[in-house]
Image (cartoon, rainbow, N blue to C red):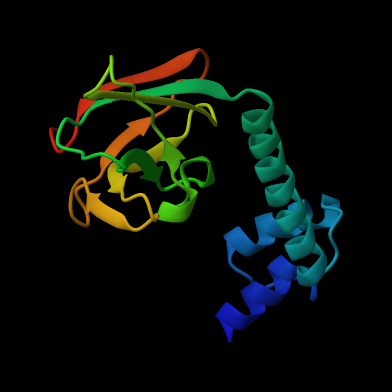
Length: 168
């Protein structure tokens, strides 16, 4: 009974009885001052506040991306194969090889591959390099499941890797 009464008091549905515990009696004046009058209103306000915070964080990241450059040594590829970086965030394809970021090389720079993408600042991400055949099929993932590279992008500036395919 006391637990259900405490929930009702905190939701602003009933007044705290005289026999209420001191914690409930102290909570009653704070509830009277609060604007949300019902649990539904409080829930909506909390959700709106959370959404506002997430929106601010998301828009801050969208407004201030960092320039990321992925440099990779992968000398085993054959003519027609290309190297990509794929990862856990949308900017790196959300683990979808069809949306992976391409790296490029030339006859004079091979076996060095490089590519760039704008990434959200101050964001944890995991990634791997993959090799795709000319028809788009994945020939090789860098590592197996749960063996991803991981990083937290810097809050400002640039992020640059110098990696070797398969080398951690």
